[in-house]
Image 1 (spheres, rainbow, N blue to C red):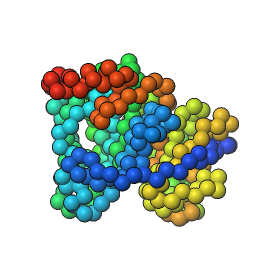
Image 2: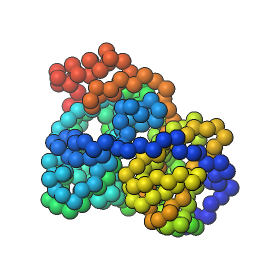
Image 3: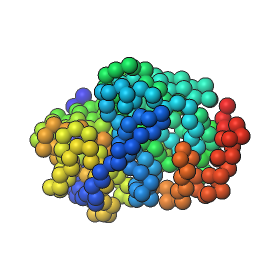
Image 4: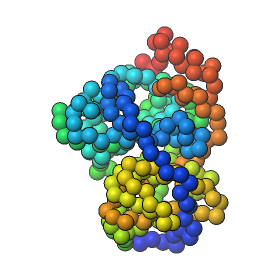
Length: 291
């Protein structure tokens, strides 16, 4: 479906790039190699987003051990698989297969123990996992889980030839697969042909960033290369962002409503106070997580 940009979708003044971030190579789970693009040092600046991991490898030894059973409390995760197959299983009884182009939305809430294991022996495994904070009032809600297959993700193509996959939030009048009213996350996967541009309105006060995972794009003349994240400034005069592709590129664009609440993280637990973290550790060790 082609979408003609309407007056409501027009961006008159683009946000500028505040900083460009180079992710840190690390490993998680049982040794899965990944790039930690957003870590604890940016949690306050990019509230409500807590972490963004990017992973890409066609070497099975980089991902085959997966993420065996591990706990979470106090936040939500959005996993987007660009290529590959991964099986989700948890102690609440959810089971799901994440395949190329699909997403998983998990609310850890008061506690969940889950695993994410590759269901392939070779080939490319590529994708992202974004951690999104929960407000204090929702940190102890029941855990939940949802799969959205690739064909169920709304998408459109602009008149400039940009393919837009609306994973969360709303873009150009199209509602995405995920809607979360408290943090209002926007998560778009943009496929930009060389020479194209894309305009996305952004609410004033929402924190926003984008990550280039193919090619190179620029904002107001400042270029961002592949495997780089750009934090967008929060200038009140700006009403959105304009991305321009100097070559065929793929980008994820993320924005959301900050919670302005204390963030205390200890590994897989994200709460508001140290006392709550200690309680989460004790609850997990004592077997009091959702069963």
